Image (spheres, one colour):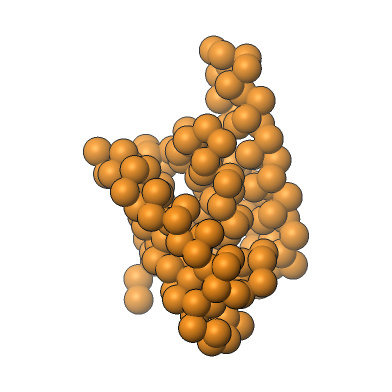
Length: 157
């Protein structure tokens, strides 16, 4: 499988210029959450670059990190999604744009939802920071449906 490089024309290098000081607070908080999330993995030696891909205030933020990998099989490009959803990373080797990162996130989380609904193991699925049970699956399912129907089409344009 060939590796691709994310399309840097679809993201903005951080920090962004401040044109609305109040709006920056949400973005700053989301960036801090994403940064701490990705740095929690032992395969990240350090962050080399940070890019903003998309943000829907209070709902979801998509960032692209260029990292110095601590293991040879780790991509140097990692998408991180945070917000009112479980935080997650998506390797950037196969995902070029914020749209592709969100679409991959929704697909991976849908697999988790289906397994949690059926009481199956989620051990080999995307990690989610809540117990895998039907109630949590239904809550996440509603958020994923919103992302799929309302946010994903905005990124496709």
